Length: 307
Image (tube, rainbow, N blue to C red; front, side, top):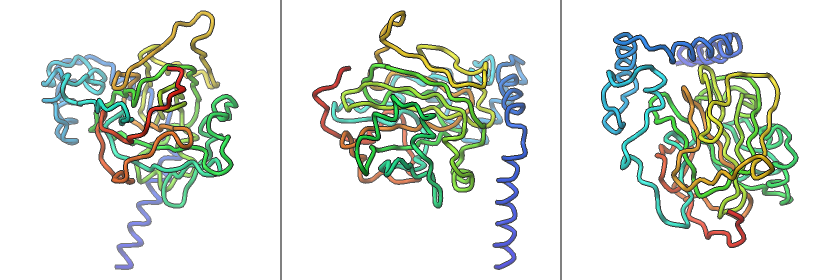
């Protein structure tokens, strides 16, 4: 028994060390290059093998056979049939933005978010110390709001949707590392989500301010939004910010359940809500499997929303 425990710890340490040693950017660029290639039967064989390994249900996709996809990326961000993900129509419902598994959820306490056993990360780091965004969540002396982290595994649908109606106010691209973000590494790499590359989207909603963050990872070759297209690459190595509803920009208004972005290879979505605006459903816990469109909370709609 002692030998097995020691061997298990050895392999755990090796997996973590590999994340620090692997050339993250080079591997990500290679994955992006491969995923865009149109190699006919070779591409179709890769898609079939990937689908079999991860038990992907292609019957719920608009294109249900591997041969219908010209590239791996086209397959990976495959749109689903219109009825594959019913959206909870209750006005009090805030829905999950993506398929996946809940990593963690709860209160943002004293400016800290729970990452996994033994690890927290700061709200300020996550939001790249953006004073405008921080002001939305730091006005309460103890509880700064609520968060929920959804991990998208390779088998999941990789388009990201709106959890509720929203009007876009700001988008921020934050460069960073490209560690993998699976649950095992969330338990072993400190500050994981606040150190990885990410795209931060701030919306006004009927439930107050809501931030939806698309977190990059190893071989996540790009992140896109429906209003701006592909955000990365290029990776300029600096924070970039876009304001909306200002001079030269049109309003971006999205309804609950509408697509807002996509990962070209998978990662994680983090949602932030202001204090006292929503309450997560009691049955939800870390490890819960979820589908886009299912309710994560049922809360009274805020009457002073500017959506």
